[in-house]
Image (cartoon, rainbow, N blue to C red; front, side, top):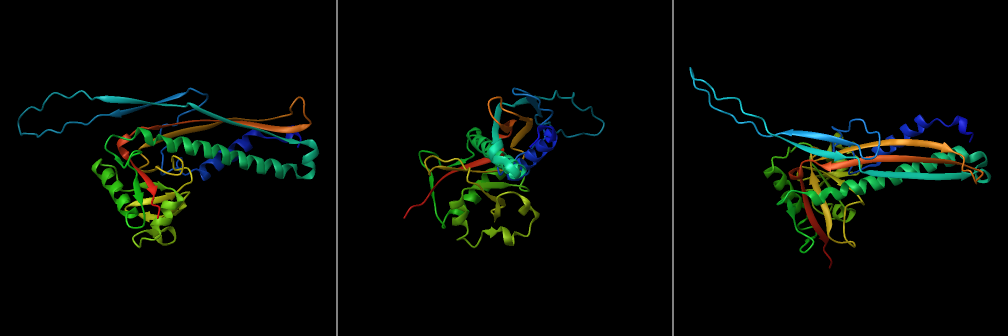
Length: 285
């Protein structure tokens, strides 16, 4: 592949599109990208302001109303603190006529690897969940089987409702074994029968207890146990990313074409009360 034919803008766009299509935790509808702004480099920050509640008074005819109240606000900082890269080469002897296919396949693999790293990072934000929004714990995980899997999702839904989280657009991300358990309960509606455009979401396998149920291998766990099943709404997590650079070059000491790229991103649980976390083990016989 002649380097003068390499167009970095095209490769960058293709890579970023692959990330969006592949993510489960980081996709639209699970996280929001409202505050992405312009990310240029590691350490960039996005400042998110929120307004406190406004007092409502009762008006009485022919009387003065009270002085205007001073609004209170709070500020959360989303920091672009993650920087992941890829750097691979295709030797001139190996490439021959298949070089474009090899490079394209390698770029697809790079996209997958970056997606996997970002997905796991976002999944790990469950540790900042609001106090009281948890079911089970590392010390006492809930044992799950076909008799209680659906009920535990209902309990997660109640926690979110008590926290005034919108009912429309709720999601829950489960590991494959939990999904298999739900399939044994007639109350679970699999994706083929859901009759919803939410099926466009990556990893969607069905509907249960008011949630779009998403399946992922990146559900945090400890040694195959204590799975952190997170339920929530897209208002909870803000995510921002940027494919900062994609460059082609010829390694000085090799006869090869090489490509390297840098992915910058950050995420913040901006509404800790808008997620709920179930710590669960698969029940053993």
